Length: 215
Image 1 (cartoon, rainbow, N blue to C red):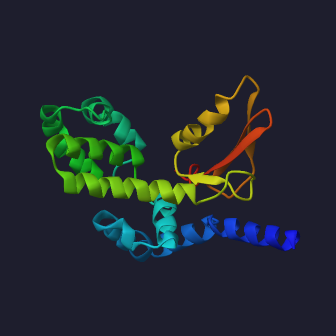
Image 2 (image 1 turned 90 degrees about the horizontal axis):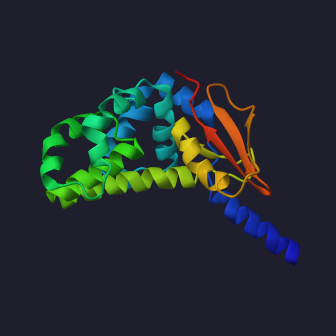
């Protein structure tokens, strides 16, 4: 009876996490980007709750196999002018009004960046646009949920899946802070991706960056 209960619990919790099929996602988005990326992106911009988890996986992780209009180098270029101030929850209304046109232009090009989405929430809150702030918050939470459900992070068969090297470090930080025995080891994984095992003593975390070696 105990063995049966354990099996049922294992199956239940296993289904809470979606295995990210990188090859299928890449094939879909490269062969039919309109259907598997741009159509989903349009829905995401308007109401991400209308996308299934499988569609969100395709959209979010598939974005790494298309060249976006606004990438990390563009974000870094505009950081001092726009995103540094926008990243602060207490940004003033006057400052938000000065940068909103530029911020909205870049946000429309890449609404899948959690850094940009969090900043847009701050900007819209500062100018009192609650509806747009709520939409950006929903978009951000949807992406966070997608990452959270991508894997347990407990082994290399179920890693937490992200799309930037910066996100890998973000998830590794709690392990880094646990003590002086921090180690990291790169593991073999899908082409165009990289996976790292972060460990500190008895604690470990597996994180996979989808498409990080693609461009």
